[in-house]
Image 1 (spheres, helix red, strand yellow):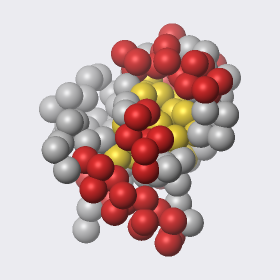
Image 2: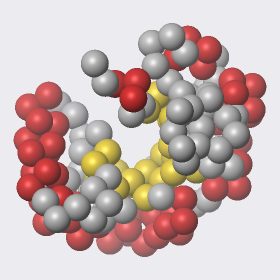
Image 3: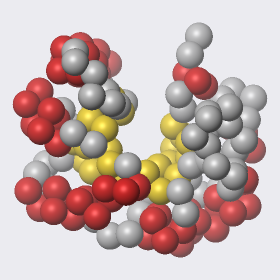
Amino acid sequence: MVFRHFGAPDAEAGARRLLAIARRRGLLLLIGQDAALAARIGAHGVHLPQRLAHRAGPLRRARPGWLITAAAHDPAAARAPGAHAVVVSPALPSRSPSAGRPLGPVRLAALARAAGRPVYGLGGIGDATARRLRASGLVGLAAVDGLRT
């Protein structure tokens, strides 16, 4: 799970609630962008936006037990050093107002092969669309709306 708090005043309380859920369910919790919060609550690591992906290497050295992931919206970002894994988006057409042009299964597969690390797909992924990415070389799928009931 990735908790992106966007500076919410109750971020620490929310992160602690999610960490308790993650531990009960055998999941990992990464804190979006905020290494200080991740350290304070004992999270499993951080997820960096693409603009901060250059911090992945230093974070890995400072926190060797953490899982560090980074967002990637283009092939160069997916190959950037440091992160254990990247989350590439948008994989498919998405309703997100911030989503750019979707990669689609073919371009996503090429990016996954070239990344040199595990790649997760994000964007436009749900029950009806996940099958389109089966042969893409992704190690997993990420979703926001696709996980809502």
